[in-house]
Length: 122
Length: 147
Length: 330
Image 1 (cartoon, each protein chain N blue to C red):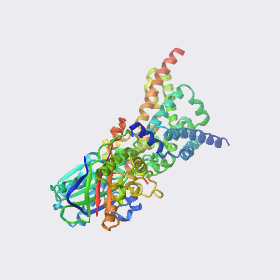
Image 2: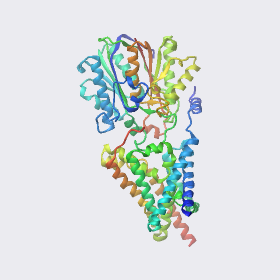
Image 3: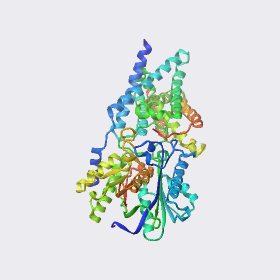
Image 4: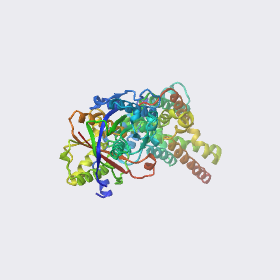
């Protein structure tokens, strides 16, 4: 039963993050690009103030999959790196923690660029 | 009509996006993507993969799927309905990297694909990394004080 | 600036429209001379495809006019791509004197106007007007990559994949003539929303149309059709509203190329079509043919353009509009 409850929690919290962004897109002049930047930065700030960690504990991937979760990973990354390497960690922690996601985007992006081409939208 | 009056008039008559429908689909699709992520996490756990690696693998899997959907041309069709539902999860980030890369193939692999890959997703990396670096410095100073 | 009446007969002796898939599936799709469902026209990039559309449109128009390319005195052509490359690459092999124009969606009227003025003034005898737009090249240049997942707002317009060509001549007698032209002025009412270009261009259309009616003493009832291009649903409504407040009621005879090209119900096109090729294909492929058949006799063609660039938008500048008027009659 546990798994269904966590799936439901992830669904609800993740969906809520998307819903808020949709309201921002439709109701304000914020472009999608600005909203993504806002979400990532917000993720870092909320993690810094200890607000985001409880959401991650509660919702799991529902909190780590939205781009705020990317900010969370960045913030946790620098925390860990600063603890291990001191001030130098501020420069390495962010990229280290998110390297697999960014690298995957580059590798798969390149791979599919070799295979596919753009199509006119319907 | 003066410019200010005209802008007011234009705003008052412009059709609004269907907020309720947009929100519903954003919530449903975004929620489902996150639930899928959670499911993948369970699956990788069950395979005995260590938690940190499993978490990273979940992101990598979603990035792969989003990149694939972008390549075969389904991502934009889904996003037209889902809006923020596909934009906000890491799938949106992957789409923002892959779509300009595919699009700029005709300008060559260096100045096209290579240079344009982060033309949309770049700001996310820049401001994400920048804020994390600032936080790192603050965190370091706080830790020194707190001992 | 007053309305210019052409001092000699300038007629359209051949007109052709080449379109993509969506345009062919639209309500007037059957009128178009050529279409390609892949929208590639046998080329390997979208940019080459757009050039190819211009090349084919002009070739077909030359054939219809039963003339040789060598008898063309000049081509007036334009498109939306950087530095008008769509026209330059598409038309280079014709070896005809060439003028590249940029008037955004108003370019086709601008090219008809300049062709007819040059012929009217006696400098040239036969000219070609060619313009095009391609959904994929315009998306790439002005908006997002083709596969980028984004939503469009209800007021946004779709760039048409279409090209139109018309051959104008003082000698060979075509049925449809250009009798009057009125160049537009740049009008900027401070609209910054790139997804509402209809609103940015409508004031320019109002400016040109009311100047025309005042200068000529005519009123909308005297025309079978007043066709704007491409204000879309939003701009069309604004135009009708604003003209009504000036005491001019165009509603019974006014239509818009952006609305005619697509079906609002069955094709998800939001506010309608746009782009240099939109009104070019509707005029060259549909309106002129109807005039040749005698279904329409007296038509005002008013093409509107939004004169911004991606850079000007990022810098927060508002979108200036323009509207050129061409009076077509049988």
